[in-house]
Amino acid sequence: MKYIHRFLIAAPQNEVAAFHQQSASMGLITPPPIRIQLHKAPKELSLEGEMDFTLWFGPWPIHWLASIEAVSESGFTDRQLKGPFSEWVHRHSFVKVNDHLTEVIDQITLRLKPHFIWGSIGLGFWLGLPVLFAYRGWKTRRLIEQGSVR
Image 1 (cartoon, rainbow, N blue to C red):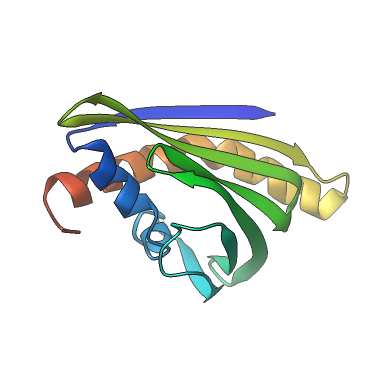
Image 2: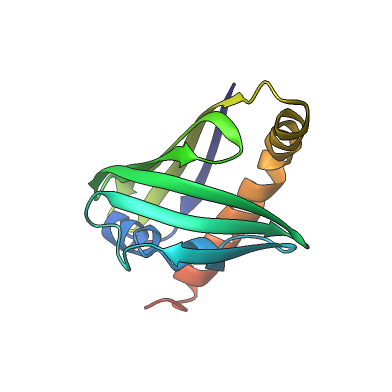
């Protein structure tokens, strides 16, 4: 299964990349009622490494371990090592449109686990991706364009 989301942000590419490469940004752009609990993550995703976290959907935890790969000013990839999917690869791309405008492209490839419970949870997550990424785009624009993260 593949999902792609795009949005424009009135900010230079390096500023957009710097925001996304802060591990704390993940919690800032995640919509309620989901809550992120970071267990282990580099403060900055400037180097390849791992992020260990729990996604809380109300009282229900989903543990996730992701490998951070191919980090550059133009983007990075997070690949699920352990979690609710058989496969999850998320490429975050930051494309310079001009000196003051960047396109953010999220490309996700995933496979559901062939398990009744995890397959159902994964399918629910898949169906919620448009809402999740609409919120993330709105919140990212709001934080960066209003200077809340500078």
